[in-house]
Length: 455
Image 1 (cartoon, rainbow, N blue to C red):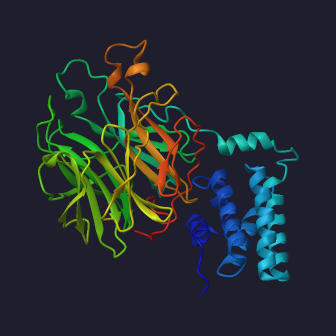
Image 2 (image 1 turned 135 degrees about the vertical axis):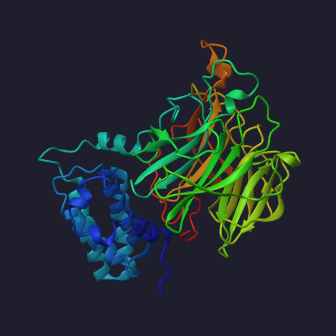
Image 3 (image 1 turned 180 degrees about the horizontal axis):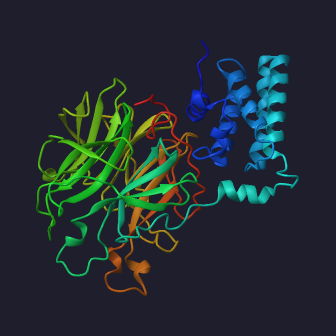
């Protein structure tokens, strides 16, 4: 059997469910927006261009054509340069599979480009407007929390029911009047924001509904993954609101069906009572690995393994740098671990998820130039989207230049940002000052890998 490329997997993942495929209304009402239809067309054609027929190619192309024929009067956003790329790709694919394949490819792309590029209601589509629609840069800052203005520690996850991206984050009480010491970063809850345009713009949704033994408990740094029909959260919990850091904290496992209402299960029993900042990744053999900051050992990153996300076996130290907020992902032929040593973001590379090698230069160690982003980047999350692009979400504190003209407590405030990751010769880089033209596709299997299967 011909091996299917990542483009095929991305197209299938984006293909509507069987019960919806023959229902035109399913594509004209939420959650199937114009943006979703455009992406599905392109994913189908990417696969044809990459594989040149066979292995599901014709089925995808025929479905895209049939779907497109139902939208002759719908103005879909088109990037002209990408359309031209598809013409070339289809011709190349056709040459590889013979004249019949060439004819199918050219006819297919002509039909769909005719639909996609057709004037809406007799009006000529504005190419520049369409390009701006699909490629508008992300907001800077990406998001500010409207409750306390202290968004930090983000985790981004695809909401399967709403077909939108959700972001859960620590909501520091940056606007707290009074309270000594670090009270303002205790008593915190988890906020939720939503993006309906692929991650470029976000709106506040709510606080996560998380039952607490006492109302003054502190919640930090959610980690969220989806497996077995449920969302799982691994959440740092501090039993109270305190003025200093010298109190127990642990990692709590919760589950949810909708990302909003959560049911606590049990604490992860780890090496100490000072463990925070969970990150989960599934090992190639099927077990799970949990990375976390162990404050009882100089804030090194430790790891534990589990067959079921419930019973954990300690494995030791993952990285010896003193860093919080580890995030692990697979991308471009390697595993990566990023953590926050409060000197930018440290980057480690691995071939086996066990032995990690640190690259020389941290990410986001130098302040950016855009207002609200003129500080080191902190505590990040990474999304590898369905197109194979990788996005780094992080927060910045609003001190220094960004505090000028504001009251003395402005430096407590923290805003969220995003930038694209780049890899060359085994080194990760970012350009935080370059506009992030982000339109994340839903992850084909999970958001932390461009290769792994469904979790």
